Length: 183
Image 1 (cartoon, one colour):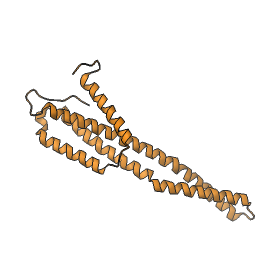
Image 2 (image 1 turned 180 degrees about the vertical axis):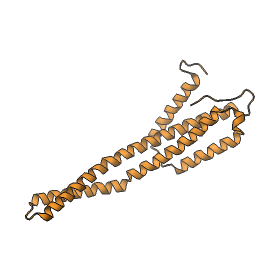
Image 3 (image 1 turned 135 degrees about the horizontal axis):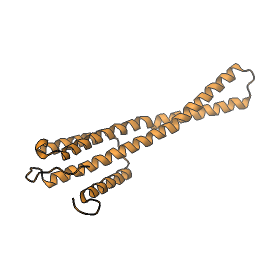
Image 4 (image 1 turned 90 degrees about the horizontal axis):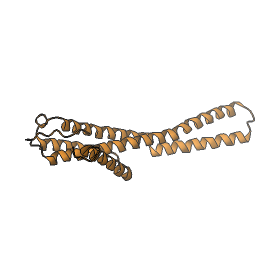
């Protein structure tokens, strides 16, 4: 996060810059949580998906073996049936939980929040004369944040709280400097 670019004689008050700074922290926290959740859901999708593929391949192979061979042992047929049942259950669970689709929703949400954060960073880096009217800008950013929130899947509350606290600590360190001095 970059420092505020406020001129001494500026329509941009400290309250406006503080609001942008706070919004930047919230955007960064939302981005972090959504990316983390997307990664976790992708891992879960693989965790279920790979066994489904392997078990389905085993069942397919054993099915061909049982069709082509005369007098296949009952134990092999039972084992093939059991493996087929397990593969079907895992595939059903994977379909029901929609890990892949949910991961993609969180990835898209993270990208939306990242875009809003980059816009705020850009505004904070530019001189106020180049940015324009503070009120219009705040309204625009608030609308983009509202839109990102409306289109985002729910975040786990504990992760949100931790990520926001982490971003606020980082922002506080940036403002005060590493030795506790106000910058």
